[in-house]
Length: 378
Image (cartoon, rainbow, N blue to C red; front, side, top):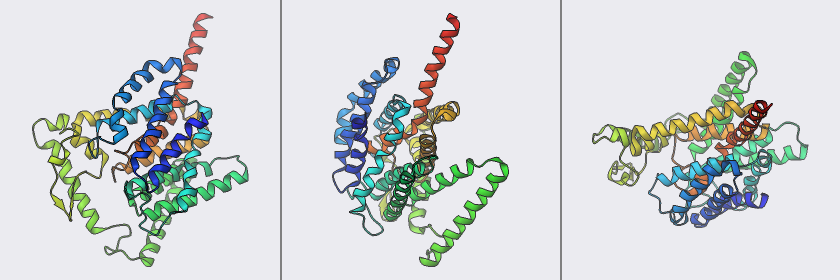
């Protein structure tokens, strides 16, 4: 299983190195397919039909022929990764979550000055998003209690390296989403109302101090750190355009415009570029699939929240922290960019990490059924 799990860091490394991003798709999709194929017998009723659907889309994954920037294949692959994660035994997560950190020393050798694009063929935001996931895994490992000092030292080094790399990409969406996710989880883990308030004030004070220091060292033209007037005004114009699509008639509020017609809408130049996507997952899904697609997304989020509520107490600290950080990160990132979508490696790694609670939920649900059967027999 360790050899199988090595496909995930291999895919991440191929995506982050200056190579054709297509090279990263076969190993990461192969991991999902293998995980579904070797699923426990009691879950094959769901795993094998989904594997059949993934195999039907093989050409799309292999040649990256999905419509840009969002396609139904993204949703199918995300669900496949979630179910594949549900088939991972709880004992595997301790190693599986550390394996993506192996890409950091390799990337260190080629890291450049800011803005640094790890792979120009994929894009800075896509590389920043993936590095943000790796950064959160390093933070979760560092926060694990009762581990040898040498492991905590390695986790601290990995956390520092990943933070610097995300910063160097210049991807504000990845950096802000990662920092806010870590801060929110730290606040939420406070014991009692008093400690939660204290941690909230500390985070606020740190944010103000960091913003002031950045403004002194590198003043922003707007006077507000992190705000790029040209870029952000363009994003607001794009968001306004895509937000209006569902209300433009022809039942688009109900089922949207589809995934393969986005180029027909919002294609006017804005600040020298074409608004080919909404820079917001939720707006993009609303425009492409209407309220029905938004309902599907809500159902998926409800499933994940319910899985966390039922299994959180049973999950080990390291995977629990990693899974909760990634859930917050992807949710916040969705308001800022579409970097999660389109490339199989980002979709699969996000789905696998989001599916952490499903692994424990499946195990303890089966145990609960066995316990009920045993009681009824007695």
